[in-house]
Amino acid sequence: MERTYASGVPDDPGRFRILFVCTGNICRSAMAERITLAALGPGSPILVGSAGTRAAEGHPMSERSRVELLRLGGDPSGFAARPLTAEAVAGADLVLGEFLADEPFVMYLGDNFLVDGITGLVDAFRAAGCDARILLTRVAEPQFYGVAELGPDGEIVGLEEKPEFPRSDLAIVGVYTFSPAIHEAVRAIRPSARGELEITEAIKWLIDTGHSVQSHFVTGYWKDTGRLEDMLECNRMVLEAIEPDVGGSVDGLSHVTGRVVIALGAVVERSVIRGPVVIGADTKIIGSYVGPYTSIGEGCVIDDAEVDYSIVLGESAIRGVSGLTHSLVGRYVEVTRATRVPNTYQLMVGDHSKVQVRA
Image (cartoon, rainbow, N blue to C red; front, side, top):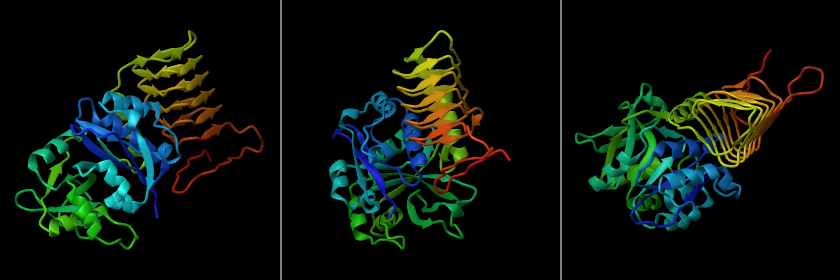
């Protein structure tokens, strides 16, 4: 069974809880945490409990995520992550009961990127007094998505998962607001053929038992970050909104131009940085070029290398490599120049990866 992770934050009755769920590819999940925190925006009445691989491995919340939580009004001192089974994520585990505390909450599947955030969804849910409000968007190929069917007043009257002949073009985005009634629904359903409790089936139970399930439409840009090009595009959009902020150390032999964020503890020596770029805390950029639309996580080393239009997640190293572009580098990865003949490639590539090499 695929393992997922959820994380808790301190109780605060004035703020809305978020269950942020990361599943699937490790790199995608970690990037989703960063993108989503950036996309929620300042002033949002939401206390964020994020999830990611660092939490799964027993690491503390990253400094970047901690800073974003503070910017959004959260309290990262209470962050606590617990590994959960899929059943627990659906709501059947007592650990989640403690986190949600019988309060309404948002369930946010981490592959989704929303430029306008989710404040509008939360406000509409509060005003409507319904048991669920589901985020929808119109798509050209609904057969590849979960699809919603609406009644005359905008209520959701039916759901289908990747139907061969869709009844509408309204795709389920993967962001939901629920009342505590969802817990009863989860207890009432049975595992699917995959052996998991499906959130779609729980919502169907709410509909079938007369609970109010309303629709809410995406008003701005939305992207499902399931592919590399999608993640790079979302990264580009996040970086377009940053303001220059150099908190780290930049020596006199380096050149930093454009909108560049260099976090506290980061060091740039003998390098060229052309924004928009974000460089995480405690990262070292030595004798290198970092080009536009690049995000480099915390604790990385970029030494004698050239990187642009890429995402490098935390604790990774790139040494002696030029021309690295349009790439996603996961956590704890080392990319180095080959020093032996013959001219061959030595790779250790995970499942479902894509690698391009010069013929």
